Length: 294
Length: 270
Image (cartoon, rainbow over all chains, first blue to last red; front, side):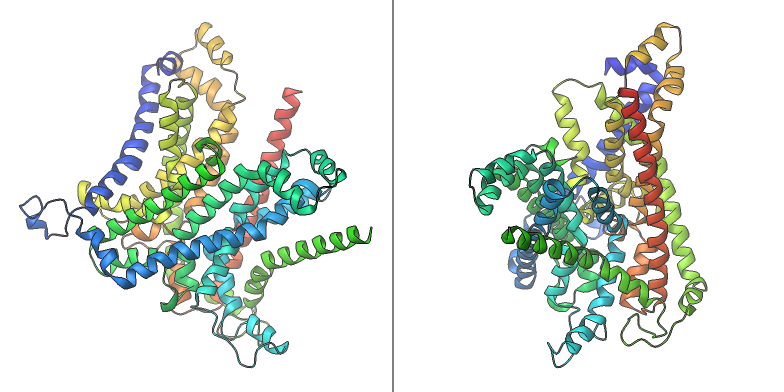
């Protein structure tokens, strides 16, 4: 701190510290704390705020347990997000391996460019692209019908499958790049040596490649799970009444049910879920926070 | 040998499938823009048209939504970039054990689901401060995590900064303000530009956070999502196509600038 003042003087330093303080305290920490505080209070009309009714209670959290529909949607969201994470990992691992270990120097920039282009495109628009593909009169049904795989068009939109497919598509790049970055630093000779010494394909991956790529895999899984569990765009566009997401329930508490306290409690549960997943992955893969936030 | 060739073919096929998966939906969406069909699709093909672009440009709501998004984006750039710059400068000079904690708090919004950032901002500002959802709240909510992106960009640039330059300027009698204005800021200028670009883009395409804090405002993403649910026509495809074209063009310029900068840095180091 003294160092900053010495360089930039009292006025600029005050500005610097003020901006950072405003960010950390007013934009990040206080809102989170207040959301948690709010979630432990009952919903009251303005006149009764601060009155005898305004006490801490667990009631908003009990609702989730008591409401079987919300509870099952909560567990479905966890399960589906885990499935999205696993599918994304399965799809991305070979691509990342190919880019980091097999591709030659000439094709690599092209591959990276091809991967980056969709990354720049809005999540909402990429989801919308699948809406067009999966529509009842859309190209997927047309293709399957002409191939004779189905007899009548299927309703894909509104199914859990559509939501999961859309999420894998939308979050793929959050998985590819961390794994690719981790694998890139693995000396190609190590894989070569393992192969020369007679290790099988699976063994090379299990004993050489995966241990090296661990931090990347952890980061990819954390990002994908968090984005999936917290997604609102994908389920609201590709989903339907049978594939509701926990975020949609939270949204309804705020803007249809009008019970913000209840919504804040659900939001805090979602946050705990995500933090829990991050800690689990960091423990499982033995990586630190600095590896995660790159 | 045959096993190797088999493997190469397999890998090639997988790569091809992967990139088809990545691009085909976007191509389908784009092509559907030019179909006469009232619902965006490519099957059946009912004839080539550009009428949906005309329909798009005639849509007054869309233009309002675009202005709303641009205003929010400008606000986020104006707030998040200075915050990110300050945070990077402060963190860079912080060597104590507090650094790890401060850093963790600063990057935590990047690991928080967007909906939760929106909710916590709404609850805090609406119920404790008395500022309801709207343009201001949207800028504040988005800035709270976009500032972290900006900070990471500035920190990356600061890693190669030689602090002796600032010291030399101070020794030679420059004022603190001059040091910042003439030494620090010019060095960080490329990062300022890229942070502004990233901040604007992040703001422009944000949906998950925005829906909670927007109040009665309708930014472009909210408009698109509501159109998809009610009253979808290929005009939305036309809009998507334009946005994708603009984004990709911006991304290419950004990449070129970034690579030129990296080459210059490498040349300076070597």
